[in-house]
View 1 (tube, rainbow, N blue to C red):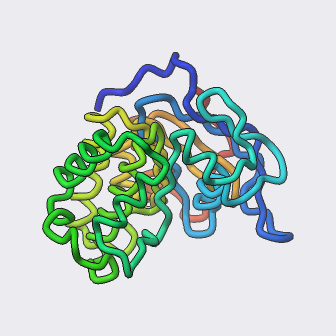
View 2: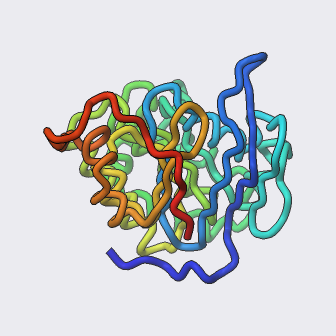
Length: 263
């Protein structure tokens, strides 16, 4: 797929970020960059620290060290509402829709910081275009939707804020392969048609690497590999540990080479 120019000023930068849950450090010295208009992805196993990165960016967790910059400004440890107003939306793992509110009311909750009512109405029709089932069920309680429909709703709710950057956490979690493929296709459309930048955390490495432009691999809270996705797909470590394409000449106990590939 075509890739955005990387010479532009980064939209998002993490510099040597460390975050913890009590005494347990979840991420250690994480530095990453997301450029305007691209899809970047963070790959890693359960417990690697992927979700912690997103929570630190969106202000849910305050980092112990390092800094987070968005649109050239330092947003480290700002409160989540302020970060949303700057144009950054977080779609959490598990969707977290409002189950007793209607689909339409959930969508309007995404637009609560906006005052441009005509533009909000246009964006509402836009998300219905991406996910027609949400229009069909606009008056239904969100808690009655299927898991896939709730994921569609969570993404659409984020779009209603008209963000410049969406943090998308495990969109394939608990979904069938068919629904996963459908949602990833829409995510790519949103990026290409609207120019919305996306930072994607995902365990389905095959889907993520096909959708994204640039990828990071996280292991035990540290980034151990980074590169353009078309190059990551060809690396033997990625093939073996993430894509299920094990080379029989490789030893199963081999670990990541702690060498970074820089932009």
